[in-house]
Length: 351
Image 1 (cartoon, rainbow, N blue to C red):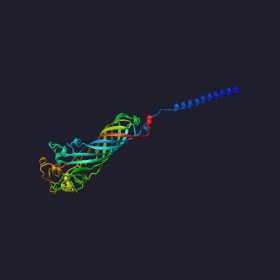
Image 2: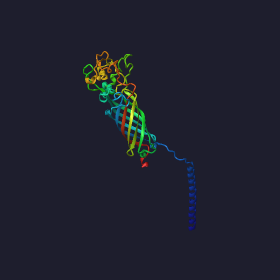
Image 3: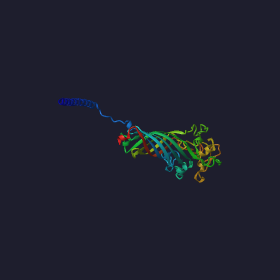
Image 4: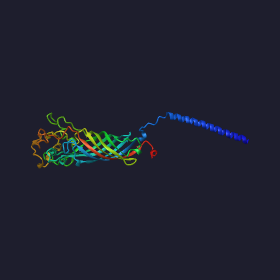
């Protein structure tokens, strides 16, 4: 009996050994088939590397237009640099590409009296014009950001820093204002004296007036509050930690309007304008001290108002308020911090 048990045990061991060998041979064949069919993994920017971020920016804004110190295209008064603030949402969808949507509020400012040099014959005309404005811009933009340094990794392994360029489109609310004088051009008190009043509804260049074909601004149309701009510029982004970045860039907004400052074309005779307030906001040379301006000897239409030749009326000198051939521009210098809010992969896998 004992011998029979020993023979049975030996037989079972042999069968198990043979079966294991056959099973291993099958696995080896399967693995060899897999290896023979393997062609290598192709690089791709998959969903595990897509993420989004929210941001907050502090901006410095400068205006380039008709109310600048000099008639040059890129003349600006640095003393009128104003702060702006923005919130943004960014979505990264490629190794170099990010789309950024942003809302920004900022104020543009310009003043002939404070910017133009009255002692310089070339720029004295701007000083005599004596116009001013401020304009609080509400801008919504979407820009495509292209990184110079490629990053195929996840957000945890993103590059330490990269330069970038950006280009996009923006819509903004254009609402220039001017500070009304205490009296109108005939010496009567103005109800809005001392207040900042909206210039667009006044039609300071005859936009709401009935002009004759012989008038300088005949055919002029009111400008719209909603305007379009093209944002473009350069910058650099720096990684602070796994989820925080700092962006610094300089960009321009090329607008499709010449009325950021309410100034574009020519003076019209003051009797064509619809109200004493519109007249006072259109022609402001008379507010300068008498010692700083020529005598007012040019009648402005049938209004009974005398103006300085070349200002405030038609047919007396150049009577040009602005340059309608150039569109206005504003520059935005921005420092932004962004926080990565999500990704489509498990973070622990990459720690």
